[in-house]
Image (cartoon, rainbow, N blue to C red; front, side, top):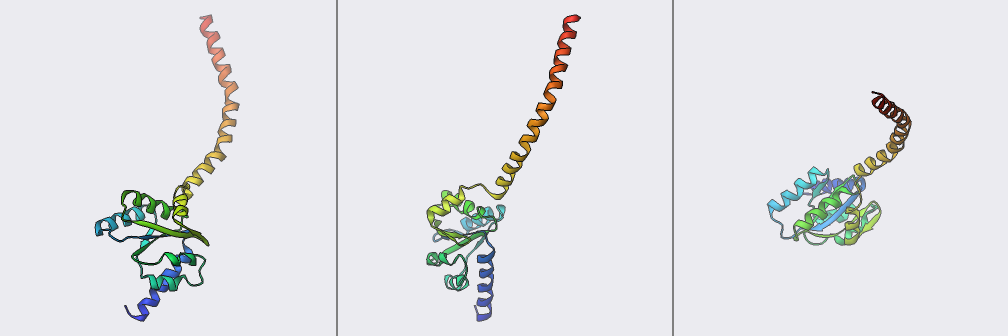
Length: 170
């Protein structure tokens, strides 16, 4: 890899570190190509990206970034999982690590907040952005449906009373 290519990789990694909601660093030593493809497939389905980069270039890209604390994890065969959604990458990596013990989660960063192994696990258990939006919409819609039910209840009660009276009269 020549100098221009290295500079391009450093620039790409810098963009990743700046724009991602979460970055998870894992050691992938011992994973087969098929297992790595499985990880990439799971990541793609969850709108998460997986990137293997030279540690030295990643450390250069981290200089001056909020998430520079993950530099300590960049040793050995490391893979970066990142996503805009602050939870998606952590969920994908945690789920894959449960199925495959060869992937060792080292830590990560959520914005400027450093995450150790337990922190990544805690983030993976949080609801995703879509789940939060759905629950908020449900909370907003619930009072309206309750009001509609309360307003419609007297009318249905009157209708059932009238039908009962009609049945008794017949």
